Length: 234
Image (tube, rainbow, N blue to C red; front, side, top):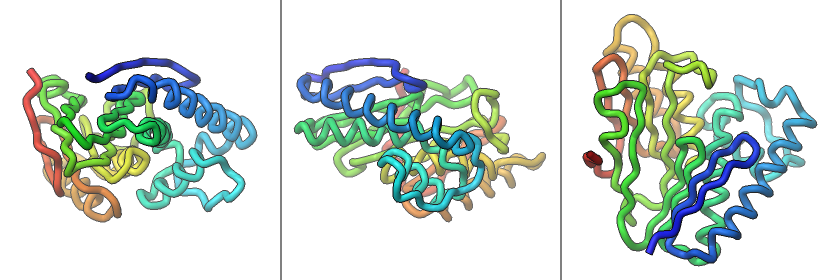
């Protein structure tokens, strides 16, 4: 049986699914702890929120910040590009420590997932209406653990220098997937749609830890790497 729980804390909107009900309170406690440490760090270092390039290692920073810094260095973006994925990863780890065999933590669209049992369908939301929410990935034990993140150049809610409808990344964890999605999306720009997608795919190939990527732009799609099985959701 799969249990679900949702919470909003700080800037994080979290959705948890797992097969072990008693693991959820511990995950919620861990998530709140790390969000508090994140907010405290940003309050003490307000410039951190606006960094658009990787930052050097800060050994005094809390674990969530250190994860963000490491992922941003790998993907060559600012550390806040990986914040949602980092919180999702920490929540997933808490579920697994409590013995969950099937666990998913989604934070604002960025997903950390693991299964040692049943397959997990995950929806892919894009910036265009034809396929958005209608296709997804089927996460299996072979894919686990997996981080899934999507970035878009078509919204004012986040900073992006790209023009992709969406870039969805599968990586070894959600922190890296989140940072890499931003980095790849930034590369998808210019009037020539096909060339811009090729640049994005090349960028995906360069980011260590990225397993695969899917790029949508103006009716065109590009795929690279080892993606989980793509499924139709409805």
